[in-house]
Structure formats: C-alpha cells, structure tokens
Length: 104
Image 1 (spheres, helix red, strand yellow):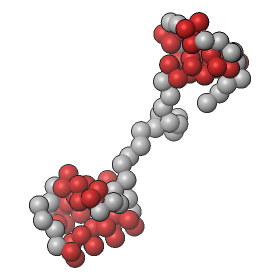
Image 2 (image 1 turned 60 degrees about the vertical axis):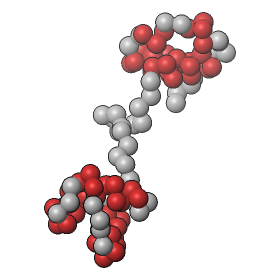
Image 3 (image 1 turned 180 degrees about the horizontal axis):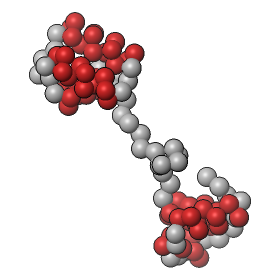
C-alpha cells in the first residue's frame, strides 16, 4: 500500500502527538488503510512505539528463574544448589528474595 508524502507526514505528526493504538486505528479509518498497514508505515518511518508488557502491578515481568538466580547470587550459592526452587509459588520466591537482600 502506497502512501503519499503528505499522508506520511500527517501520520507521523499525528502519531508523535499521541502515540497510542487509538491514534493508529483512527488514522487507518481516515486514510482507508488497515491498522497493520499504518503500523508498518510508522515503523518504517522510525516512530512507532510498541506496547511494552507490564504486570497487573505495573512492573516489568520477571521470571521465577530470574528470581532464583538473584537469590543464589545474594546467598553466594551456585544456581544448581537451588535447583527446583523455580517451581515454588512466585510470591514465596519474592519473599525469599527480599529476605536474602536481593530484590530486583
């Protein structure tokens, strides 16, 4: 799908003013293109910002394995010494991580 220079400039300006999916959908409707096409063009123009996944608490997600590695490091242990610990509930691992003094 081809875009004119005016359309491209308009899309980039609109998206930079409000970089949300709502803007993408509105541009798609206005320009008679698909949202996927708009995202592709904005990406090629170097302005598209992909949504970053966050947990319900608004934090970056951390795996259980990463938490276990941090615990092992805080306790000066080899990761293999804590093998299987990653199967514990995440809340328990976080509590252990805090107690070990190694909160991410």
